[in-house]
Length: 369
Image 1: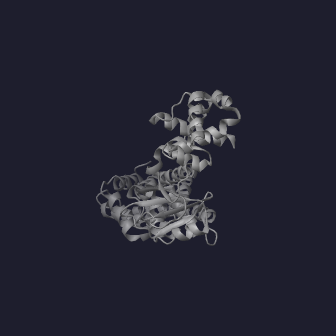
Image 2: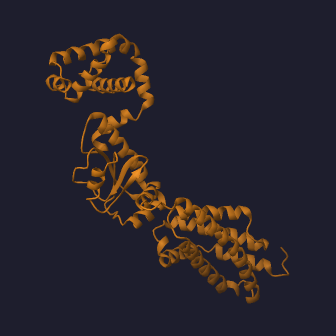
Image 3: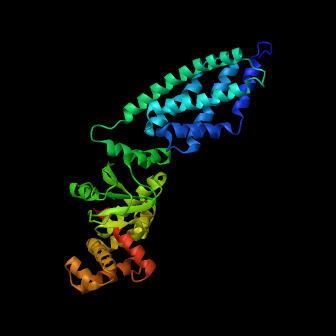
């Protein structure tokens, strides 16, 4: 860069403005205050993208060039990210405009002390405008393309918002605001098998956001449902950006409830040990392998024995209740439990033996179907 043309002073000026510790926080505050649609985004999100754009612009000004393909690729990513977060393109462009205005205002303030004349500063601004125009064009096209893919079909608005909510991060914060869900006490996630009655009962607890996602009815509520909504798994409360793992816990709670024959809304904390066992297919396979000979030794009585052990354990070791469930005599239950202990070496009367026996028998029966 040659000093005589005065361009070095322009670059130094921009770099000084960029290095001002107070500038970026002030810009972010202005953006969040002025552009309502991005107010729900974390300041770190806005700051990161703003800093990256400003750095790219400074490099372009220093080299007196337009944007490179690498810079435009970053801009595409920004457009896609904002589209997935549900931020309108007008809001994205508005936020950039607010940031630009604040930065160039600061540049004019310090230009004289840096020895940069008004004409040279105007040249820099015109060069920046050319760079920014190409950036805006790529940003708009990327945002529109991403939005066209993400836009819900008619009647699918709740499902689209719910998917964004379950992504976590800033997308979740915006989705919560769009759905009108209060977050003061945290949010709850309920998962059930799809059904008109279940969905209708769930919607009787407004505010609620619910839709079928991956063949399951998923609802996000500001409080646990008080009415009966069929068999469902529940997890929470949690902050909006933590709902993705909470949904997984709710799914595990539903599976555990179905495995143990529970009905109603079942919180994951009430079936934690069942969920822990049923989620570990690798350990279940090890258990099957260890007791393969026992299953073979039981022969045609293997399934009746497994059913008897499960019923006995799930009826709190009450042979009469287990017999009524299986339509057999209580002594038959006793004999089958005893036979299980003989062939496996697992005593279901003990605490840990009971857990192992339940898991093994459930896995046996699942593999037999």
